[in-house]
Image (cartoon, rainbow, N blue to C red; front, top):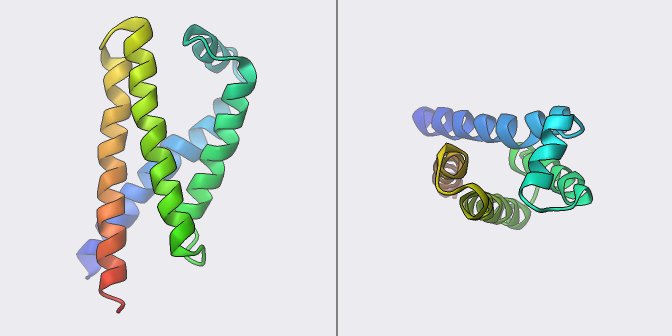
Length: 123
């Protein structure tokens, strides 16, 4: 049980750092804005994405959030990582920029699996 909790929180904190803290702190830098433009998206899309990422992270890390909301947050992040891979691969080919979201998706999947393991043991 303790091992499951450690694995869950390690994976979830990594997601929170990659998808909540970093985007919130760096979204208004010129590098981030150029990254969004480079992929062909308008600047407001990047701003909206950051808002939804921060909300998603809050949904994952706050224990009182209903399970259904957490499921939607996991789904939203999965879509985000899949479409980030597609966007990067379409613009620049399949290089590390296109592959990296799949690595983060794998971490998200670990968080999701262990979230369910922890909740199954509470029944």
